Length: 89
Image (cartoon, one colour):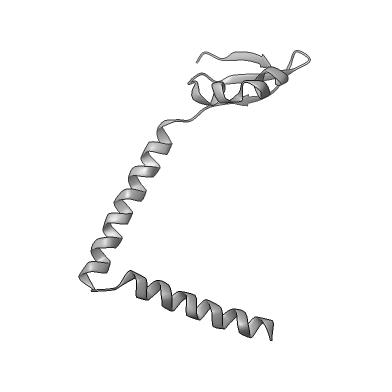
């Protein structure tokens, strides 16, 4: 796998470009490699797809049980408020 070497100052200055690239970067300081940066891109797309699928599944489950999301949120807030009051006493 191809790797490019850059100094730490250059790496810091151009970080956005290295994040967008697909080539690993060897970061050097005074000519010595101090670390490697390996950008990852594909995993973000997979994570987003998994979250969207989970969201659809949750929506279906809530609809099947006729659960009102706003009612659940309001109940949660009320319980949380009671818990805070007890903690502050």
